[in-house]
Length: 417
Image (tube, rainbow, N blue to C red; front, side, top):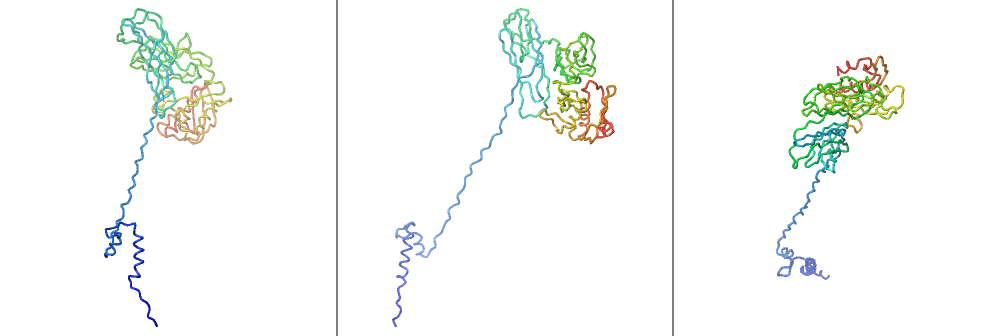
């Protein structure tokens, strides 16, 4: 038998080595012509493998969005009355305008005056933060400013403030240069807003030109007759007076009455106020429910509770032979803590009350309620009472109110809450 044929190991590994060399031809070639890795292996060394550094991800900073800036809303003040005072030597003309802004967040911003011949056109602007939340109740204001009368010829002139005009007269020659105006006292004047409404309606009264820091009487009476004092208040340091009062129960629909301010021997009379027939406006079943303007110090209505005001809100209950009952039921079904967009507070929202019966005897409304009364505390108790009582007192047949809940007088229940 022939012995098996043997091949040198060099012949066996030579093809393999050639294959490796061709596969590694992409490596780094040294002076010997071998890739670096192969050369190291042939020398009995293992190559050191160095991992590439991890890629670092660069995160761009997220831009910070600036808080949007809401621009204040500009408006025009509602002017009810304008008074003009003229002084000589030196010549000076001072204008006092009174009126209202729509809520407690609206402020008087600026007063600008332009002259067009014999007419001075003044504009009183307002400013309001659109994000502010305030009670939607009229807030009175009084704004005083001087007219530039340099070089004016004697004669008749007029100033118009936001469309409300008032004439005045320059009696003598004006100086060639403007001199500092002296302190002027406006002509005593009383204005009211609105000029008509039902018994119990809220009337804003504004007076100027009164003695400063003084006690004055507020009265009401028919034209060319005596008046009855219904309130007593103090003027401010400028002799101004702004307050809200109500049409008393002793007036009758269809009559005209005058509001009066008495300062010592001086009596200033307002424009006539027309008493309407039992409803605040449309004659189709409109009455008032009463809600609360919180902490406005009696500016929007009669002051109650912890420096609040009780404020009328017109609602329509339709034609009914029992409007008092229908209006009270409407009040008791308001299920909002803050009424609509008005911002007015409803202290009855937590309670669950129903009208069981109403009797009116000799001008006294005896109101029987049933259900559960829940008061929010010491400040809510007078608010609850004011809302119920004022809603009843707006009717001309009601001079006083007695309210019970489940047979217990309201005052007794509130005193324990």
